[in-house]
Amino acid sequence: MTALILFFLASALTFAIKYAGIALFAGERELSPGWAKTLELAGPAAMAAIAANTLLLSGSGFRAFGAWHLMALAAAAVTVWKRDTNWILLGGAVGFGVFRLLGM
Amino acid sequence: MPVTDLDAFSLRVPRHLRREFANGAKEMLPLSVGGAVFGLAMGALITASTTIQPWAGAIGTWTLNAGAAQLALMDLLERGAPWLIILGTVAVVQARFALYSASLAPIYKDFPRRWRVVLAYLLTDQAAALEKHFTPLLPDPVRRRWFFLGGAGLFTGMAAGGVMLGIVIGPVIPSSWQIGFIVPLMFLAIILRTVSDKPSLMAAVIAAGVAVVARDLPYGSNVIVATLAGICVTRLIAPASWYRGAPTGERDEPREGAP
Image (tube, rainbow over all chains, first blue to last red):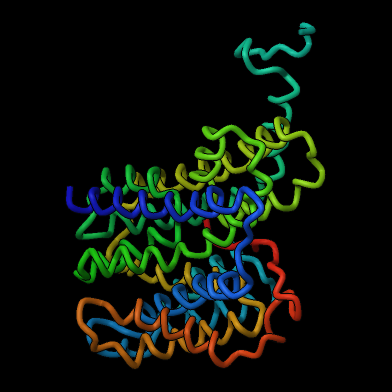
């Protein structure tokens, strides 16, 4: 139940963010270039922070080098070949499976 | 109204609008397949969670309709972070949608409010990109909104459907498979796919570095601190010429990214 309440709060917050621009800028008003630049950085910064947190850290320390790190390298290698979210996911997942099978 | 304009299922929706709905769905289909795969992994992750009941995860998926934010929420909840930190992180992850909706506001302004509300709920990175792309081809606002509904609705339906399927098949996945690897992988996939300009790259690198350095901060607050550091430091030191649309500062269109 706790998680569901948290989901509802996050949903309300997310909807408010999604609707804010539509409500505020439907007229002549425009988003300033400064705010546009700042908002554009929010996604990459937040996602990189979460990715680093989950990939490199385990508990309060560093994650031991192994399949998780190699999976990230495999995903990056796929990106060089094909810059597509689905291919990157597939490459990373297959890479992780192979590295785990190899005992890493 | 001519007979040919009547809807086969409802007399209230003319056929030409149903066709626009189908056209929108057809254009979104390739991206929706990716959303379904993303959802499948998310569903499996929900079943592996110790803090989220599958039914709560299923309901939350439909109400939230935001893959990256849901991943962040689930990860921080699993780590025992306080709600304020979790909601703050969700807000930061979702901040880009304020930019998308501001850029879509002139396109939505001719729609009735109930349509704006529904389309705002259905807004995703993919839907924003589709709507910006097809707006010049759909000058009629009525046809346009049905096209948008078809595209955005299909994407949300397939992504959430993938989550439901993942919740069903998730329990058969052995714990030794360490399904948690999906969290960083999904975020990496989004970052590697979408970060293409210098300011975004700089913000991502700084945020990743600070998240690791600040790992001892309490309540999982290193993520939100790192995010704010990435944004603020980049805004302070990145030259204006690095931004897309420079030197005018004009906004670019939303890019394809996460569900």
